[in-house]
Length: 255
View 1 (cartoon, rainbow, N blue to C red):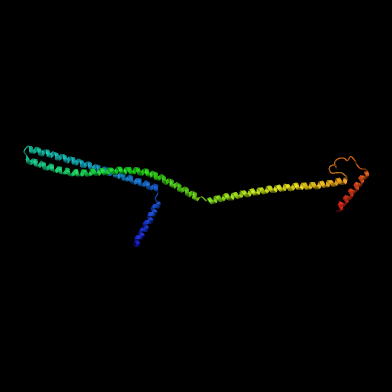
View 2: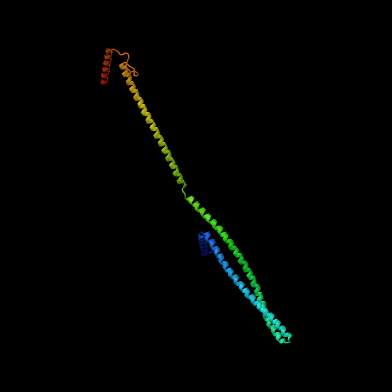
């Protein structure tokens, strides 16, 4: 194979590939039906012309056949009158018309066969066009469904599901972090309350201990310090207590 043939084949292959890719099924089917309808119009015209030619041939055949019959009768008439020459001339005319009629009959038979063939082709083409229209609608519906399915698949394929799921995961982590922070704040708040109560309890202990010391110094218990003593000591005992308190104050101040 020569270089030119190989290049020619490559070019044709590329052109066919481009044409195949550019073909739209809906448009191709529509054009195919249009082409068939144009063929139908031409076939109908051909049938009409064939029928017209057949009718003209038939008219000519009938006319020549009638003329042949007429000259046959004239030849018989001339012969019955004893005029053989005239009868012979009439037969010559009759033969001419009969030969023409015979040739026209052959043409008429051929034309009739052609007309019948054209009519059958016309009926077959009409049936094919009707079938093609039905098939075209069906294929168009299938093509549209395939296009819609392809577009849907392309749309689904274009969606970045990993990114979307990643966003959900990030938001879930963030919510968990917020929940942990909220729990931590609650726990810290609880500890603070416990510390406050502990401080109060510690403060109460100091106050109680101070009250007990005061009661001890005054000779009364903390439970009865607010009540008037029924057995009060004498004035001398109070003086002793006052002296002791004064000494305690002095020691505290020195300390």
